[in-house]
Image 1 (cartoon, one colour):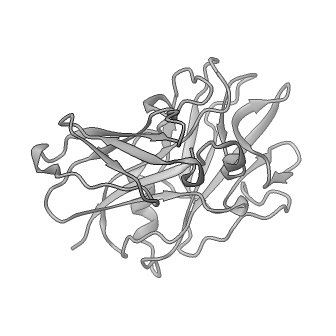
Image 2 (tube, rainbow, N blue to C red):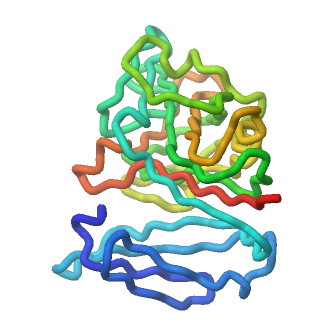
Image 3 (cartoon, rainbow, N blue to C red):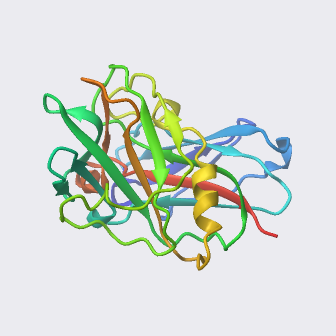
Length: 255
């Protein structure tokens, strides 16, 4: 439920405490010292409109580092910052309300690109945790095995409707394999959350020339060529339908 539709947001924390914010941008703080370093904790939020109708619960999982840990939560912010490309002819689509990761349309394979701008991480920081949260566009149950990489570039560009604009980008040597469980339409829970992608972010922020404020691109494709299987997530262009775009959550320690 986007800010324009929300009247208030209720945040729930690992110690079962809650906090309600009535002013956008809806946000909250939590004292993480109650959780041990290295633990992964769950924080959820539910938005309510002026009719007291509730949204689906949105949840993030964070790794706690109480000493000098910084974090950032970044949504995709434009149609040009998430896109899908058909493998067979390289056609790139920018304005679709969904992102198909895997096989769709009777064996049309798609590769997905997602760009997050204004990343605050300084060059050489230690990345302790990074995940991407999706919202399910379909109830997908087929087995699928996906591979996630980042673009190995300290100055990534928005996507363009040019052939092979996603697959032609240079990628990190590091890769994260993801075999997501079944998805249910509209859900944005742990099932729609990627594994830890900190190794991908680390490789990029260690590049010469990286600096805080630059952008990160992630590329998601099938790891094993199969005849079927996909996960469909809502894109930035689904905002008009009140569904959230992909979100990057990242934590780091500065030296």
